[in-house]
Length: 342
Image 1 (cartoon, one colour):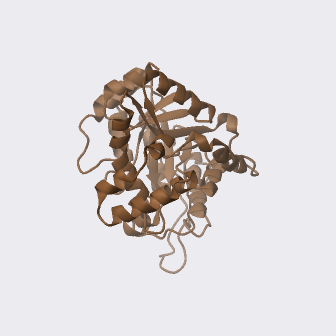
Image 2 (cartoon, helix red, strand yellow):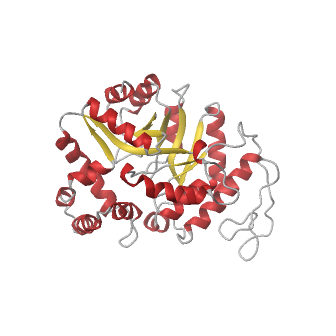
Image 3 (cartoon, rainbow, N blue to C red):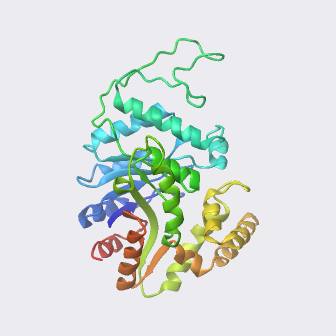
């Protein structure tokens, strides 16, 4: 089992100790450091900034939102960072949801699977640099023609030759169709809320993708980098309580009223009534009660909390379920070293 560090996205202010966290992860032998974005800080800039302090770890975005950049702009950012890091970049992509796509980026959300497929195809064309990039799909036509265009668009190849023509792409996917798509066209899956209890279900979704004609990888060389709260402590109740406010945000507030993919994950786990209650409380502005409504067993389903031995045994369970990298969110450098000694 490998470990990754999830720096995430910024809250109201930039974090003050990410340099220490990255240094600790590099020193402790972590495999990867990831950054994310929502509707504030972006994913690529912090990764480049802190990545310059590393020499060994892979540098991944988990995830960059499709609607934040055109496919060619995303490919440019990735090939640039791959050069700067000496070939250590991972591109993690995700569609986000209609709340962000339409409310923040001013773009249309429908057809997320088709958009993802087209997006990745164009990104890989840029990196391959075999021919000028063209695409005839309805979502990202290149060059742009027809009504509203000048007609002067020309197919182009990247001026800069990529260091690697095949940078790994992982997909942040939560629903069955999107997870299958990750297995079909990507190099890995980035689940944000994973429970080994549903490993057979996840494996069925993945197997559907692996079985499709032209599938890019097999299970043996496909990565599953699962983000999890992993806490070594003798006070499990306090650790669960600390996690519940953020979980409540994802279950009840991180999405449109009728379209919340994070909430759907927990509905599939069997927590539909909890999701409904948390959503109602959060939308009535009762953040405290929303967090209190989350039972400990829901937290425990997708987190690893306990003493040193309990955490070690639970990590083995996740590994047996198919997870290749545990991606840890922490604000404590010492916690990173504790995990490296498991």
